[in-house]
Image 1: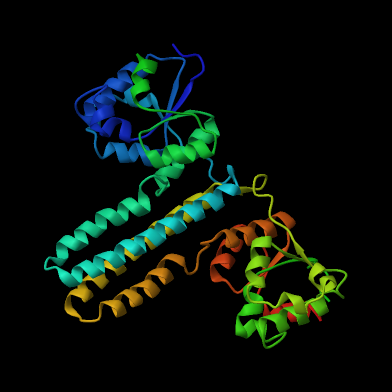
Image 2: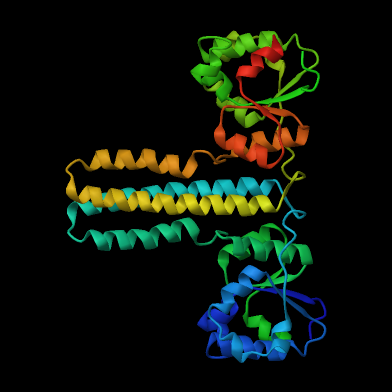
Length: 190
Length: 190
């Protein structure tokens, strides 16, 4: 038992990514249900999800098969986004990071245009660009409302964030938020 | 004389954009010098520029022609970016805005690839994409360290921001920072 960790904020990906999901079960529904069965017995740990993250997870889960008592174990709570403050220097880091990504996105697009000129299959080039562009612009950074929800909620509650998302981890570290990889979650709840 | 405004944070563009520059002079150097000649006499107003903005302006100015006494009128000061805080909800707005812009950038690139297939002049298509892409990703939002400097310095000093930059104005308004168009600057200093 770990005495230091008494609040956890959980990301969807724990129960979706096969690698981490399989710690608890072979499908998102089975993994989430099994996790809740452990969690409900852990009186010294509180489990939180922002509603946006909970709803995201529900798209992958057969909610009907999980009892209300179990579902109650997962507290749904939004961060107090109008009260919480973040340090100004984060704005610089965010803007600077985005600027580099945006420039890279343009370079990728220019390259794709030159390729389109020489080759036959335009749709392949476009599909290839889409993948590279999304990776360049979105991977390794926070890029959604859900990402911000996770970080601000963990900050507000002084909770430990459990996620596999590299971008969320990067920004959690900038804000001094403790985080764990899902592998440790089973150790904590069993 | 305006009793309410006693601190101004000034943007480079005031002295560069012909429309606003011409209020004071026909070149950036002339406009800035003339402005300082008025400003030095205004004992009830303090004038600030973040060093990043001041350096940006110096690229357009023949500094040797302006006396040190006049240059001292413009106080160079960075915001206290490690102490200043901004509300968490701004992160949501920033991330959401960026996400829309990034998606638009990809759509523009896809369109350009299809055009490149049909037309001869690839370089024209790329040049056209660059302009559209930069407009989509950067216009109307904060996209540089200098932009963040302006906003955070005005916030810290509770100063009025003078700028023509739509993106800076948008974010100043989100943070409750008062701002003026350069047209009013002459009225304030003369």
